[in-house]
Length: 357
Length: 77
Image (cartoon, rainbow over all chains, first blue to last red; front, side):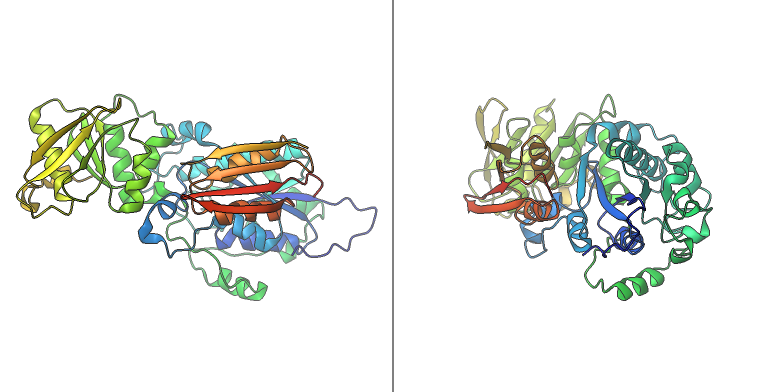
């Protein structure tokens, strides 16, 4: 629970909003600030690229994995309200046109952090809060959390000296809340670098035992496999513009790029197949009828019978009839029209490695 | 007292929570909101969001792969 406040009656209760990702650092940052008697609420931005949620929610394989939103869980542990903001539409421009470019994959981390802090600035103005906190640590991430780039986030977001990084505050110039005495700088921290030891020690001090530690952060854009699929989609479309369904589908199934104008997505297991069923009115689909098997969604169009045969035979391969002489499948058009085909399942040796995205 | 409904079927985490949050913002204390979701995560996330924001979950029903959660709104928390 939030620590009790013991301030003089005439002292204004200061309020901070924290960017809460669901990881340990933002959890610690909030608690450090709560300890100084500040009222903290959380804000979390949904860009469409959040790691948690989609894949675990869909895949039966992950049914034993606890299905929780870590940002909500963290907020509840800390006793703070959490405001989740849908920024899917606004985020498109950040991803497509990052001023500071991409990191190792398609992660526009510096632009992304600036965007989120900028949104937080708008939020504190609308909600009469005093400042913003994040769990950033100097030197922890190669793009957005370097000593040289952290001031860029503060400047470009318009947060300036209202942006406090409690875990690294002593490594950075004093902010307004420190100068005004709302925060005691001596009780903030000087963490830096990629080591997690100081955070883990502080977590232990606060009694935090169960916390998320996502490898590489909580964003699919830092994931190499996901980045390859996204870049393939961009490379084979007239424009890089995307919709939420596009980026969710990149997390589902096996992707085979049969031609620039044609990709097929084959469900990997029951949970994905069930989820993909919901897209049958947006995509042409293929499904085996003679054997149990995966659903396939067709992104693009067949321009030749050879392409259709390749798709049918691949889908047959991922059915329980993969060793049968013949598998019967139906294609289903978006209007519901179905047509039956019989094919020989594709052998592994026949799969062109370049098809796999 | 009003009773609103949100259809969050086929939406994945955290969209069912966001839809619930946006609907609750338009309601008054004592109003009810029922959210229907197909995301298994909603069973934890919507009650969690309700607790931290002071709303009361009064019913959770699971049927036919759907999770139906009814919240009693408290805007005074």
